[in-house]
Image (cartoon, rainbow, N blue to C red; front, side, top):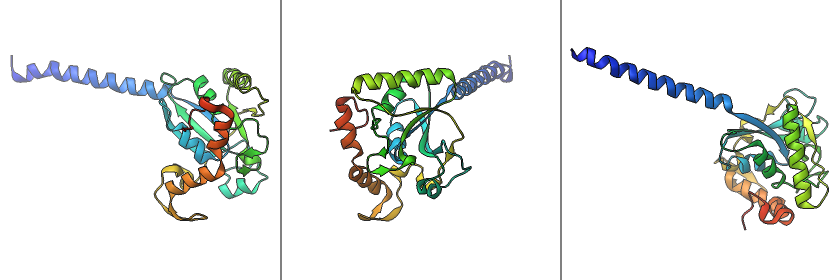
Length: 220
């Protein structure tokens, strides 16, 4: 048997292995799901959920309104009907939609009808967006569970999904950016400015007050 003939079975085995890995990768990508939520400042929601095992990405953007391709300025000015929202992509084999929904409710103030924390106005209200009846059932169950756990009325609506428009690049991964900014706290790197904003806005303080040890992203 020649060296070439010895090599052929090895080459075939290698090709089969590569094909198997490729199929697994494709299947994994196909299994990914999305959950779109509005929880006030999208920088904070994105920062929180990107820490969760099984979440493969989170994109800040806008949804729920009437204007196509709105800018940040359009939405914060009011009148477009959009929410600041985050589209969370996750692997349901690692983390379930139910778990993410429960985490979401416990990372916001779902009793507030006028916005979230220091950010006021319609674009900062909480909401969950669903694409089918099963997603709606899960969202309603999570809302009911949260209401029972909190012992207060929860005003977060469950809404039908509408087009999601990613915000511009400046707002993506804002919490870990390195760009130097001139803020009300003075010149600061983006990540540092984010931390000061989050603290000054009182987000974690209010979430801890509401949810105590059940708050998934607040550390004492």
